[in-house]
Image (tube, rainbow, N blue to C red; front, side):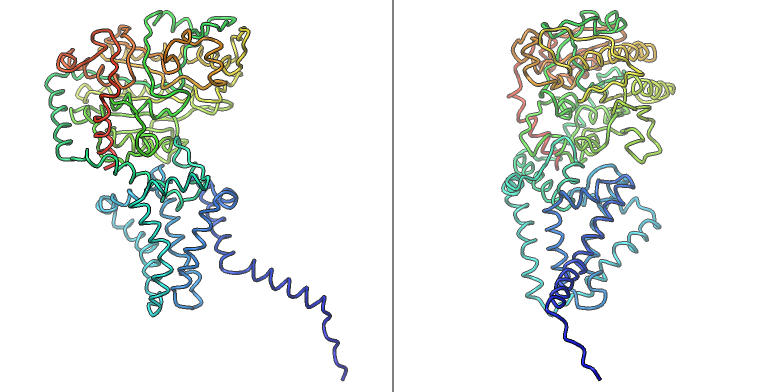
Length: 579
């Protein structure tokens, strides 16, 4: 019998390398990461948050946190053939729960939403409750049953880092937010979903809770819910007694800048549509926006809530709203018997719109069905080929139909109809097959973005004129207000200075067009702030009684410098918006 030759050293080395690679690549942690990658990719295909490669290539801190939690759960669960699955179950359930929340409600889950669980269970069907128990409660309880409670030291010590994170979020939220900046995590204030897609679900849960804690700490002395509720009801009762119960239509237009206000700009033709020019002429006013070039929600906050957007809390104000009643103008109108409706032509995750609108006081809100799974919405983006955002004319056409149907019932409550447009947003794209360029910018200083915006304005001003004419015919005895949220960034401040926007007068970059139509007639006010809009509405509804009882600069045709004096009112409102 011949003895086989011993394996060569090179062969043994190859086997060792293969073994190491197999150990590194084929283990529970690698498979866990692969499964989550596939899961997030699937969720993206179902219309959820971006995942798959985005998850794997961007969410480094999220993956590290997931590995830590998975390691800990593996360490405390009793060894068995099901150990790896039991340890993964809580993490997967937490992901699934957040994704279901996003798919059903169109907004990103935050820890504060847990306060609504009791209310959710009260309105949930028995079948759905049974599904929750089967899909979540049983697997989670199974994992708890399998924990090895004979290792208390490992359980406590392994849990310590999570306890420290929770404690820091609760008691030192400023340090938590600062640490995110030091780690260079990308957190934008205009979207709820993008930071989650780039940083991770768990990572952003901690960040948003830290933001909320900062806001709560700064507004603690202003929190008095019973007194705040009482004042809101008194305002509503006052409006019931003095109000005309007339309808109000308020439109906030994305970057609706008047190209003729650039005194150094020359165009090959008038960028204002003739219908718009005939309707408004020189009777257009100005309103001071809190922002330049971006942050639409800041403008929305001011025109709906009536206080300056100081942005003194955790980011922009809309991101702090949790959905609890803050009793801005729509909330007051709703208490006074109005039907309060918000129509937003973009995504519900844009600046935390759903929770913000709920807290502001809208009883109904509608987003395009292309962005939400909602059979009740009346809105559709229409054909956006080559243009990204819903065209103003299409939005107005559908809103007019909605208003006409709402007012067809003579016994219907008065209507507060709020509309947010998005068509003028960066990058100012026109589908030239549908809306060809009609003019060129001939000035010595050339900004191609201003040329595009001027062409957009021609079509947008035509849409506004048609909307107002039809709305006046449908609802002649009403108040209609259209205001630009802010001027667009264009190529930066240089364009505004070189082409002399409003002759570069003081605060010109914050001056935006505003249009008023009262009882079918165009009216001009002196320059106002965006936060004066609710006062104008209340004064109109009360036939001037509001300004006889309160200080209103526009009633005396002047702009009040009252911003700083409204800081306490702002903090009090925000204290209850984040309550």
